[in-house]
Image (cartoon, rainbow, N blue to C red; front, side):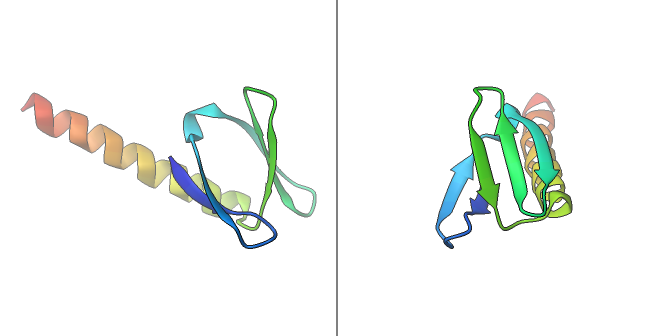
Length: 67
Protein backbone atom coordinates (compact mmCIF):
# COMPACT_ATOMS: atom_id res chain seq x y z
CA UNK A 1 0.00 0.00 0.00
CA UNK A 2 1.26 3.47 -0.86
CA UNK A 3 0.00 6.86 0.28
CA UNK A 4 -0.95 9.40 -2.41
CA UNK A 5 -2.42 12.91 -2.56
CA UNK A 6 -5.48 13.89 -4.59
CA UNK A 7 -5.60 17.32 -6.25
CA UNK A 8 -7.77 18.62 -3.37
CA UNK A 9 -4.92 17.68 -0.94
CA UNK A 10 -6.82 14.76 0.58
CA UNK A 11 -4.64 11.73 1.22
CA UNK A 12 -5.58 8.16 0.38
CA UNK A 13 -3.88 4.78 0.27
CA UNK A 14 -3.87 2.52 -2.77
CA UNK A 15 -2.86 -1.09 -3.17
CA UNK A 16 0.07 -0.75 -5.56
CA UNK A 17 -0.45 -4.33 -6.75
CA UNK A 18 -3.61 -3.10 -8.52
CA UNK A 19 -1.89 -0.33 -10.51
CA UNK A 20 -2.11 -1.07 -14.22
CA UNK A 21 -0.87 2.20 -15.77
CA UNK A 22 0.37 5.63 -14.71
CA UNK A 23 0.20 8.57 -17.13
CA UNK A 24 1.08 12.26 -16.98
CA UNK A 25 -1.46 14.25 -19.01
CA UNK A 26 -0.10 16.73 -17.46
CA UNK A 27 -1.80 15.57 -14.22
CA UNK A 28 -0.71 12.14 -13.01
CA UNK A 29 -3.47 9.60 -13.66
CA UNK A 30 -3.36 6.12 -12.13
CA UNK A 31 -5.51 3.40 -13.70
CA UNK A 32 -6.14 0.20 -11.76
CA UNK A 33 -6.93 -3.32 -12.85
CA UNK A 34 -10.47 -2.80 -11.51
CA UNK A 35 -11.01 0.07 -13.95
CA UNK A 36 -10.83 2.91 -11.42
CA UNK A 37 -8.83 6.05 -12.20
CA UNK A 38 -7.20 8.38 -9.73
CA UNK A 39 -5.69 11.82 -10.39
CA UNK A 40 -2.87 12.57 -7.97
CA UNK A 41 -0.28 15.25 -7.26
CA UNK A 42 2.71 12.91 -7.21
CA UNK A 43 4.78 12.44 -10.35
CA UNK A 44 5.30 9.12 -12.10
CA UNK A 45 8.86 8.95 -10.75
CA UNK A 46 7.66 9.56 -7.18
CA UNK A 47 5.05 6.82 -7.46
CA UNK A 48 7.54 4.36 -8.91
CA UNK A 49 9.93 5.10 -6.03
CA UNK A 50 7.11 4.55 -3.49
CA UNK A 51 6.24 1.20 -5.07
CA UNK A 52 9.89 0.09 -5.07
CA UNK A 53 10.29 1.12 -1.42
CA UNK A 54 7.09 -0.73 -0.48
CA UNK A 55 8.10 -3.91 -2.30
CA UNK A 56 11.61 -3.83 -0.79
CA UNK A 57 10.03 -3.58 2.65
CA UNK A 58 7.70 -6.51 1.97
CA UNK A 59 10.33 -8.76 0.39
CA UNK A 60 12.99 -8.01 2.99
CA UNK A 61 10.51 -9.07 5.71
CA UNK A 62 9.85 -12.35 3.93
CA UNK A 63 13.56 -13.08 3.57
CA UNK A 64 14.21 -12.39 7.29
CA UNK A 65 11.45 -14.79 8.33
CA UNK A 66 12.94 -17.59 6.24
CA UNK A 67 16.36 -17.34 7.92
